[in-house]
Amino acid sequence: WTLKEVTVIYVLGGPGSGKGTQCKKLASRYGFKHVSAGDLLREEQNRPGSEFGSLIANCILQGTIVPLVVTIKLLENAMKEAMDKDGTTMFLIDGFPRQLDQAHAFEASVVPSTFILFFDCPEDVMEERLLTRGKTSGRSDDNPETIRKRFRTFVETSMPVVHEFEKKGKVITISAARGPDEVYEDVQAVFKEKGL
Ligand code: UP5
Ligand code: MG
Image (cartoon, rainbow, N blue to C red):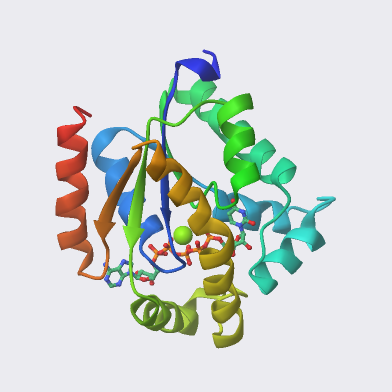
């Protein structure tokens, strides 16, 4: 396997827009491997001996973006592992790229994406979801102060990525302020249309 032979779909959207929820549904139905950049960073943060642990912990708490070399390496390793172990060639990359430099680096040095699923959701809806999840998630960033910072980073730093791919006609926008099953109906319609 080489990384050039794979299908990559970026799944983007604000914090709490439902990226992880929809990716899990898709992965079980379509044979995609769900690779969450945030989950990989949290794993690396907790890995004993990681040289990036405190850097990652600080970025997550402040809602800022971890330097791209760290995240791209983790994504590449996770993809290679899935390819070697299960022969996976189809990947949903959840929550990445969320800064233009990451997008440019990944497209050039790993593999260009096929298309982008963008979950569009108002902040008040996302905030309520995250605060509810925060009661039990144990995530350091599910608190009112960090949620505000995450929203700001999303608008200022991550939306430009969506806009750049929109100009290339690669973004499919899904209205995400509905129940998970209704959102999933639309997502499935997209995959059907794409012949996946
Ligand atoms: N829920 C989901 N869908 C729902 C629906 N349709 N109706 C009602 N409720 C719904 O969902 C969030 C919550 O809402 C859950 O409780 C769910 O049950 C409910 P989820 O599917 O988890 O949404 P998601 O969009 O995945 O939200 P998440 O909090 O994971 O988004 P973020 O983008 O903030 O988090 P991520 O883990 O991707 O990143 C965290 C941090 O890591 C970033 O802030 C950043 O510091 C760092 N990071 C990087 O630096 N670089 C990267 O490339 C990636 C992350
Ligand atoms: Mg998530």
